[in-house]
Length: 215
Image (cartoon, rainbow, N blue to C red; front, side):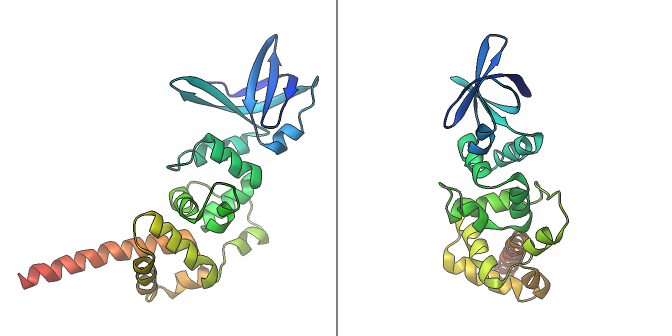
């Protein structure tokens, strides 16, 4: 595994750069922000992640290790490939991605070209607990609070991406939150989603018991 590259910048393109490593040119995909700091003829260091396919070996380069870590975690989401993960990093800083994942802010991910509400809902669901913000300041705290108008569409989108209809998702959320005013007030999408899914599981078990007792 290639963890980083250090060498002379031989070429900078729109989406890739070539790093000269003692006469061997290594092509690396990177975000526009990372590429903007590379100058042909100067020495550079890029942290890298290698994606291995049957017919290719592709390197993705990052300005620091935090960017690479967020990239690798994004790849754990089903349906998110390296190009889409790189697009997320092109739109948001790593810390902003951590905050969005931690607070369940699906809207932040829909700002990325190629990510709609369903994919954003899946990202929020699958990243829950995997990315924790480094900062603990007021900006992070403020991002953890959302109104019902903010969180409800995100939870509905996450549930529809998992197979529920919008009507069933909305009804389940309302019923699950009826006894959880603290979750509603906090507006944490990931927590509300998990609570709703737990409620659905318990409700299904109760329905099964009722059917069994009638039999």
